[in-house]
Structure formats: C-alpha cells, structure tokens
Image (cartoon, rainbow, N blue to C red; front, side):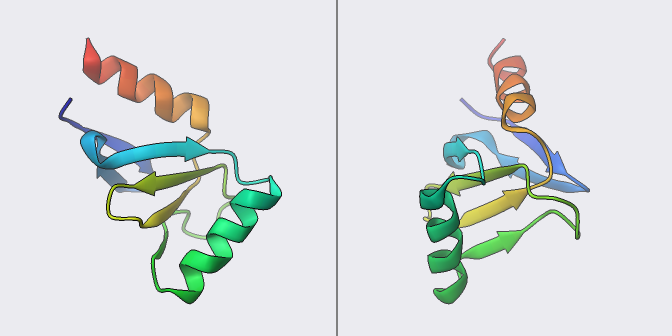
Length: 81
C-alpha cells in the first residue's frame, strides 16, 4: 500500500513505513518515547500541541502526532480504497 497521510500541523508520512499507531498514555508507550529520545530516534510532529498518537516506523523511529489514532487509521483506510 502506497500513499502519504497527514500526521498533523504540516507533517506527513508514507503509509508503507508505518508499523504501528499507539495511544501515548500507557506506560509502555511512555517508555518507548523516552528510549527513542535518548537514542535520537524521536520525531516530534506536534508543534507544541498535545500528543494524541505515537507512530512507530519501519526504520524504528518514533513519531509523536497531534492527531488521534482513529483519525490516522481512517486516513490509511481511505488510501486503501
């Protein structure tokens, strides 16, 4: 599946690079974010807004998004059609 979806505030990502989209509130998600930050793999695409989703990519980068996971999933489904 190819295509690009907006992840909020001018950011975009190729759909085929997404491994998972998770909620940012769980303890494992918080640890994932902290580890990615210390390893310089964290990309903050929120522009200071609240993090609503964490996107994990095939390159093992962790992207913070200000868009809800359900909205991101819907955008991916729209590309599939």
